[in-house]
Image 1 (tube, helix red, strand yellow):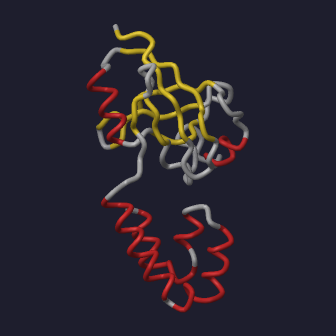
Image 2: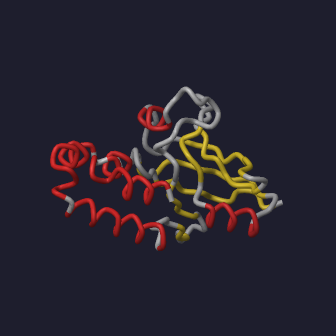
Length: 164
């Protein structure tokens, strides 16, 4: 939803492109008023399409592991609001272990993805994936590792290790 707001109201200044982590295009949009309005219109359409059809990954691997994107990486850490999540992701190494911690937003539980070394979060599981894990494995323990170190949308592997 925030992407749509950025695209509509500030897309002409490249804010939507900065939000997506595309700094070069953001600067280009800033100096050309959203590529003379054409890029701005394309961004608004793209933001609506991404909102209606999110590209979150939630597929199962042969070993029973679940692959998922991590969302909200553009924001500050929930566990320490003075630190950007992208800075925490930058300090992670590929295949490093992570944790899933239950957090609440407007009274609804979701999983926060946390770096055990720093204790800081890098984002959250998409709501569909959090709901799936909570409903399918309500008392399970999980083994989580970083698969793709993307500053905008890292990918993690979740393995159910104890379904008590």
